[in-house]
Image (tube, rainbow, N blue to C red; front, side):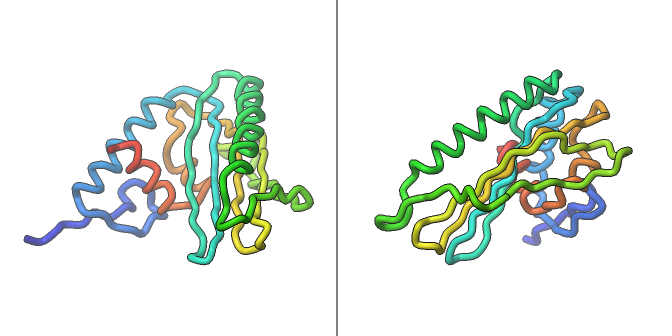
Length: 176
């Protein structure tokens, strides 16, 4: 029995991957659920994480909550950033090592946006942690995005954060 693969460029023209039909169906289910959840919401909170260790780099992203008011989205993001930092610092490292906040590093990720862009990053918070052994690092980047169209999830968002495999993993997790 031959597995048929479906190209991901059906979803976004810049994507080059392929999935077997059952996985593609899971992806589409997750994509539709997220579109329905965030439909018409102009301010969306977003998280992008990177983890560096001896195996290499792992990245993930998540669309968090949507808000109708910018001030509420920013307040939520500020609280979430502080809670995430406190929680991450408490997690055990390898052996006796401990996570440390690398406060001397400016890890603010600012995505330059054209004024006419549908997706605008309007508020950013981030932090970087490293183990005191010096080998492992984690970056947490939080953003408030302003989406100026009703359907927030699509080409403009995927172009804003060019991360095909992370988007695919995220939507598949929402489709299961």
